[in-house]
Image 1 (cartoon, rainbow, N blue to C red):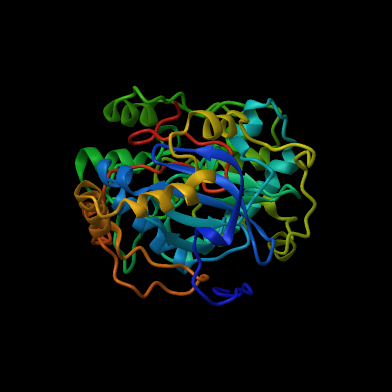
Image 2: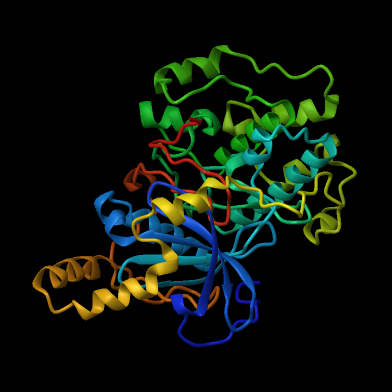
Amino acid sequence: AVGSHDRRPGSINFDHFQILRAIGKGSFGKVCIVQKRDTEKMYAMKYMNKQQCIERDEVRNVFRELEILQEIEHVFLVNLWYSFQDEEDMFMVVDLLLGGDLRYHLQQNVQFTEDAIKLYLCEMTLALDYLQSQHIIHRDIKPDNILLDEQGHAHLTDFNIATIIKDGERATALAGTKPYMAPEIFHSFVSGGTGYAFEVDWWSLGVTVFEVLRGWRPYDIHASNSVESLIQLFSTVSVQYSSTWPKDLVSLLRKLLTVNPEHRFSSLAQMQTSPYLSDVNWDAVYEKKMEAGFVPNKGRLHCDPTFELEEMILESRPLHKKKKRLAKNRSRDNSKDSQSVSVRIYRHTHWWPSRQGNGPLTRRLPVQIPSRQGATEQNTVPTHSPGACHGRPLLTKSDG
């Protein structure tokens, strides 16, 4: 339930957290591990430089993500706890998941068992079912955005290109990561048509499960592929399933990777009809009572160690020196140039709402939140996974 966490009231700011180490970065944002000083609870903190957000026209995406995260909470999502800002940055404090993301583990050549992947499939099914009930299309389901907790359970993150559709509306923007994007997204971009809806996330889930099982994706798609060539590919190329996979598993994957969204599995109820999942106790899955088939090693941090080195050595404005830097800047604030920059950034981000929990967003935002109509959505992409140890941003995202 939204707002179920025990949170102390009061104004939250940067000083309430101790910075421990950097664990990830994206095009205009970074992620670090923090500890809240009063409770000693650990979180992941995503922070985004205001000036860079403005220069790269990413303000709309940041506020869309915040708007969505303010209103949702689920056991298999990376949930928002606090949001705040200072002169330089905007911050989102979210659940800390130390098990790494599935992309990281694939790159470490982890051989996931079928049982482990079956549990991921069930947990993501519940996450998508919940998002659908909240009228949210995630639009970027992929191994990079599925994080594991220390017990090995899966959590979905990164709502930077998510959108909300209600009352039969359809999305039309070309948004996502190319190898994981459903065929109807490309069709909609080329021919207009009726757009797309929640079914696109279930296609992406099918691609993700296939990849984690086999080590490569069902279709050979890259950033360089044109939209027109992808439309042709989906109509001519058949997915090759492993002969060693159980028939019921292959049958379920076929239902998820059905090109026609009208015939694709795209709900919890449909997934529950699959013989492959007939033995699943869904209540036990939701309560995390199912033992994970893969438990990350607790003795190590599951991310690229160079993130911390870059923050300490290469970063011109490291987070751990922020307090001194801001104090110094404030003492020089009477200079004309300093005031000019301050005012410009302030005007763009003055209404960044302070977050004291998962309650509703009530303050007016500085930019117009994208229309629910897909035709007015911005064709932009996420920065990186909050709390994740891996993520790479690309325009109309690709696999890199």
